[in-house]
Amino acid sequence: MRIGERSGTILLASAAVAAFGFAGYGAVAQTADTEAAHVAAANQAAGQDLRATFRLCPGAPQPADPTSNTAEPAKVFDNIYFVGIPAVSAWAITTSEGIIVIDSLNNAREAETFIEGGLRKLGLNPAQVKYVLITHGHTDHFGGAQYLADKLHAQLVMSETDWNFLATQQPSTNPNRGPIPKRGMSVKDGEKLTLGDTSIEIHETPPHTPGTVSLIIPLRDGNARHVAELWGGNSFNFQPMEANFTTYANSVARFAQIAKDRGADVQLGNHPNFDVALEKIAKLKTRAPGQPHPFGVGTEGVGRILTVQRECALAARAKLRSGGAK
Image 1 (cartoon, one colour):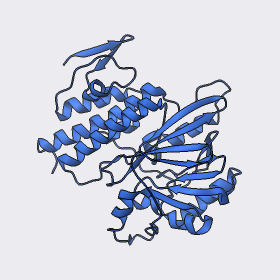
Image 2 (tube, rainbow, N blue to C red):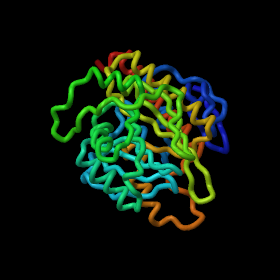
Image 3 (tube, rainbow, N blue to C red):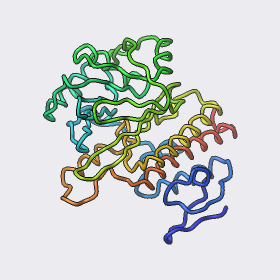
């Protein structure tokens, strides 16, 4: 296997890097389409500093389940706040004309306690929530949506594809999961959700669900400007078919190019164990003036994270092809 070298660092050849030119990587050749080669490429891209996403790869160690279901709300950038829990994230984006909430946790109780209550703790008015943007049609992301729509009169937003997907689903029998929300506003691939001075780009990235959306979000940190990418559906919880892993890899490659074009330098997630959000929030508490933002991974870091996702999907596909998974 050939290697490239930049700034004294040896970089493993990667098909994703070669095809999509993620920032910070030199010219490289494609890896062999084998499980081992793709896992090695993902491992190299993750390095020592961006390990969380590597858990997607076959055989990778998995993080322990959260020991608590409680997290304090936190201001992360000047215009975005964490209002989630250790198992699943929710975010609140403030704009000149109100608030956009991303995802709604598992149920009405969590939405009331951690989103509505969290906003109040942060000095924000829950009545200013105008939209609840749901990244995909799984109950841990839409479970509290109907509560927020009813209580705060917020407009629910999801991809047209996933509204149609939810129409085919049965309500969960788990008492800790909320109801399927009433159909709200639909968005399509490439559209923007705009409120006041803020526009969020929405891109469909299946197959976590058929209409999972990933987001490009403008952020402010004092006088500095940042751009976040939020991948809407990490885990390979779809039917283990070659076509689905191919779709996932293609979705990542397409979104990676969009993220690169927009200059995305911040990773956000909708589960804290994929973006290490709670650890980064803890670092914010001791951040001194002038220090880098803990959520800032740089454009190269975003490229590396998305490379890990793609290579892990290709590794899982290669494992399936070889008979290593049924």
